[in-house]
Length: 476
Ligand code: ATP
Image (cartoon, rainbow, N blue to C red; front, side, top):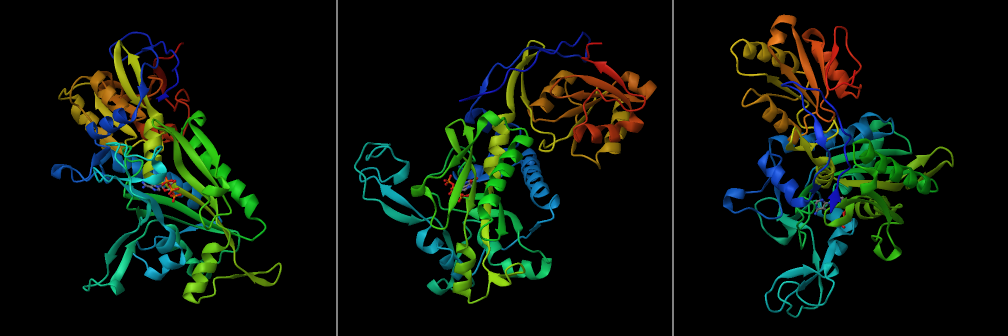
């Protein structure tokens, strides 16, 4: 089970808007707490819940969709936007069925399935510790290989010739577009193609909330390199991807790299590392990084009859690039970010649940809160809200006490609350409250938007804009 860090004691004076953390961390996180917060606050719902739910599929609610978009955006920024050597694509989910023969999925994308002869429940043989049914202890059948690809039919005829698959990974859409991208993007080795999109696997066993589902999203990079430089690039991407999670706030102690043993390597892989996260059920894969050699391009060249080599100026030869693939799950990342951000503390003698999400990931960046529903305060607060809402995802909230509204925002991870009080009507200044330290600064509304933008980009709270002042929670 995960338990968070002790947070620092923060002395914060007295007064109606002031808060103090008097006891630090009081609880630890488990999957039930995250699932219940997810449902209660509108992050994640079970699919088709009104019909009893579809166990292996999940729907992202109003806050979940923002968090998920932010995770994907952070990945795209790091992998495409900030690099000269990577471009993106968005390939279709349905592909020519031959692509899946070439890739090896039709033949090999299967798990060993056993069935209990008494209760007929089915299990993945390699998940079981003993050779008996974990539910009733009954005898199990011999394992048979069960292909995980979902099949459907293309067009109005439901026969074998019309079978197509829902892609079980996004990677193949990249490989089959290698030539298109090479010819149009003027990229030279080493370069990469990135893609984010849905993937489908008819997993034998699902579970652990959104950790393993039958419909999920992947963020994959296929990085094409000259043979001989593959080891170096593989090591580079392992490090780069590990650092991405740390930069976005995951505690390094909750991450580890695990090298695949020879017996575990997929049929195409020369080397593979998993980035594992310490989920409540134990260390489990968050992302895999594989050195796929020249397997994929050679297979697609063979099956399609196309030349998928590129010309190497140095050796004046056509070569088939090697591929380094960092492959991450969007949903598993969302789960890890939620678990790592979840903290329970005592503030003002009451428990507060706070999601210390990195500001780039937080679904709502700023909440605008008038002190009360006073008829003079509300129009002013609405004005302030209108001023900033084009720049950030915001929420306006004037219901209940200010304390409860702060707690609500803490629980969904909102980094900053802007409070409008009676003094604001006179001096046209508002307070900005920091979710983690509970400190507040006071700034003129003319510089509110630029100040929030700077704080959301990482500027420390005590760096003040013109006319700004330290307000609550500072020692001096
Ligand atoms: P596992 O061993 O957990 O089944 P895998 O090794 O088959 O995963 P990959 O094929 O390497 O997974 O897929 C890359 C990433 O896609 C995984 O690291 C994970 O984040 C995500 N992923 C794979 N299968 C699922 C699933 N059923 N539900 C949610 N995410 C998944």
